[in-house]
Length: 200
Image (cartoon, rainbow, N blue to C red):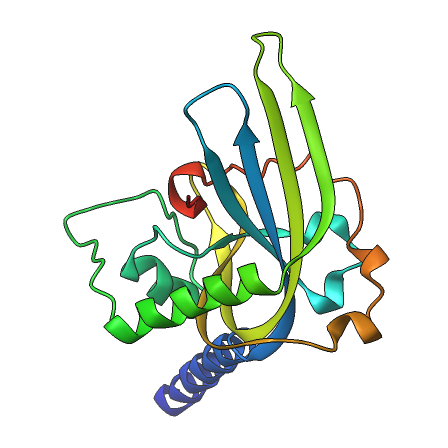
């Protein structure tokens, strides 16, 4: 009986490990950049990132928040294990002690996204207060290692976090019609992780 239980535990651990490795493998994605600008205010321009797997481009509801900064090392580690995370939770055990190489990697990815992005939509809003809001949406095809996990707490859904090995897919739009990305993003609540995913 003990031997049988040991086999079952081993199989379950192996399955969990393979699942985590599979979701962290290098794959192709399209990163959506939302630049939110107010004309009459001190807000300036806020930038938010969302992501969609290249295999899911026909399904608009498959886009997910992409955290490029602002999250803890605990969130990254849990995400890589496929465990549910709450990026807003901070405890005495929370650590932001990332290796310097990780910051270099994410900064490189940010520059890669900015340099190779394509504008796919401009949304304008005129508010009763006199504010004028302009939202520009950009798309950038990127390959690399990303982890994904279920987010719990203030946002319930799947989120993505960057890991490593990022490259711009320069021939992506030759094989995938950009019209699959050109859709109406007006209803997307892109600022759901306002305190984590935005940058200026």
